[in-house]
Image (cartoon, rainbow, N blue to C red; front, side, top):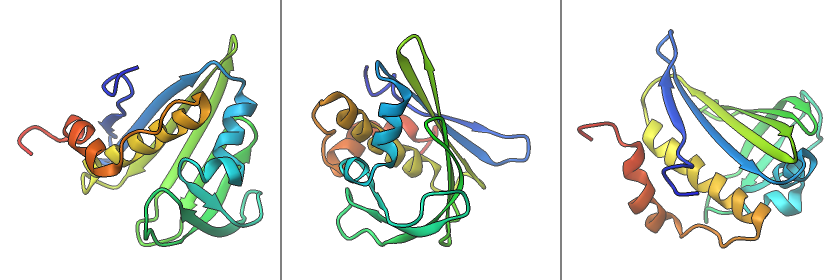
Length: 166
């Protein structure tokens, strides 16, 4: 699958908010993909780890392990229905809400990752970032090589998300 095929879709909701949606699929059961998303030793290999209780309403620190010097953020688990739905709310000034849905059909699990942003501010950078992290998740699930380091990745994938005229 090429970077273009893995590209997230950016759309505008009726209220003007921007919706970012990624779809990725693997020939694995939903429980295996869920484990890569939520088990600390596996999630640390592609994005980071959450240290806290694991139920709706729980809050705890989330440490990004793929970005050197990244600050520790606070996250609230809004919804958690293993192995199908996880909704997280970041409790910092960005107040990001991330939704992950897993569906399994015929031995293939499809992940739908959604983030709704208040406006266009930073949407291209945010989309590029999630693209990179989901490529890292793919590497953990498939045993493939990790994507290139950030600067090299942005040089290739970042322009795919730039608005015309940027």
